[in-house]
Image (cartoon, rainbow, N blue to C red; front, side, top):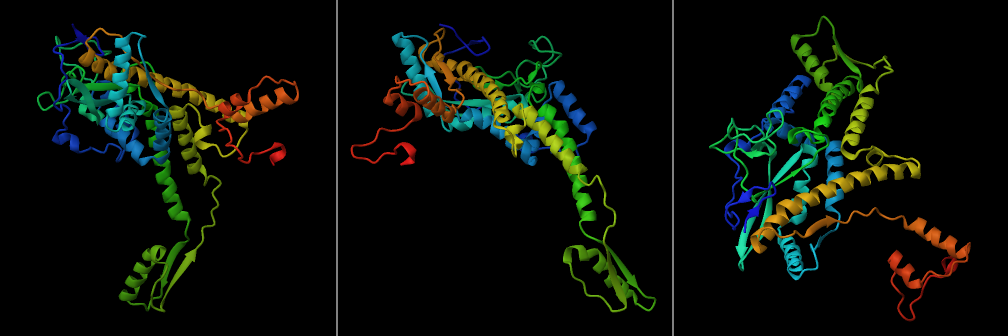
Length: 428
C-alpha cells in the first residue's frame, strides 16, 4: 500500500527516518545582527533578499525584533499563548473499530511527545515569521513508530530559492513553495525536505509566498521608526534633564587648575561632586527653553506600539487599555476571538496532515481516514449575565422549570455535603 506525505508525494518505504537531519552548521551558530545600525535602506535590502527566497537576514532581524522590543514580544507571546492554552481533542474518523483504535493510538502518541506544549509554541512562530519548521524525532519501540519530540529549526537554516531547471518545482515569481534545507553540500539552493521528517507550519497574514506572509513584515518599519524615536528621546533627556555646566577660571589659575576644572565639568553630571581650586567656579544654567513638542518622541513611540498591536492582535484595546466602556472591550474581544479561531484551525490542520498523518501511515498503513485533531475554541461565557437572565426568568416571569442540578452544573457549583452550611438569599 502506498503512503503519501502532506504534499501528496509518495513515500518510498514504510519506516520513519530515525537520524537527525537538520543539524546546524558552523554558520548557523552566529548571527549577523542585522538590527544593529538598521536604516530604511538596509531594511528594504533585507526584504528584497527575502523576496527572492534568501530569508536568512530577515529571519535574524525578526528574532532580534522580538528580543529587543518588549511591546512587540509581549503581543506576539499573547497571541501564541492564546492558542497553546486551549484544550485539544482527538476524534475518531468513524465508529469503525479500526478507526477508533487509530484515534486512541494517536491520543497516546501525542501525549508521549516531549514538551508537546513547547512544540505547539514553536509551530506558532510562523505567525510572526511566515513559517516555522520543526524536525520530527522518530523512534521505534514495541513494533510501532512513535514521535519522541519535535525540534524547532531556525528559519535561517532554510531557503526559498529554487534550484535551476529542471529541478525547480512550482513557486511564485521564482520563489519556492516550500522551504528547502540548507546543507554543506547545497548551501545556496538547499535540499528538498525529507518526507514525513519535518513539520512546516505556515501563516498567511496576506496572500503571497511564505517569506512575506508573517505579521512581523509590517511591524518592521514601526520597529525601525520606534527605535529612532527612542534614541532621540534618550538624547533629549540627557540634554534637558540636567542643567548646562559652565566652568570659569581667572587669569591667575594654573594649567593644573584648568585641567581639574575641565574634568570636573565633564564628570559633574554623573559624579554630582567635584573638588576644584578656589580660583575656579562651576555654574549650573537651567534650561529656559520650554519646548511645546517635548512629548513628540513619546507620541511617536505610542503610535508605533499601537500599529504593532493592530498588526499582531487585530486591535489595541486588550494590549493597551487603561480604561473604557465594557461594550467597547467586548467588541475588541470579539475580534480577538476571530483571530484565535483562525490560528487554532490552521495549527490543527498542520498537526493533522504533518504529524497525525505519518503516525497513522507508519502504524496502520496509508489510505486510512485520519483522526481529527481540534482545539476547543468556545468564547468564555459571561456567567454574570447568565445569572441575571435566570433571576429575571424566575423573579419577573415566574418561570419554575429550571432544575437545581442544571444550575449547579452550569455554574460549576458543587452540591453541599449533608449538614454543610450554605449561603441563603440576601447573602446570609
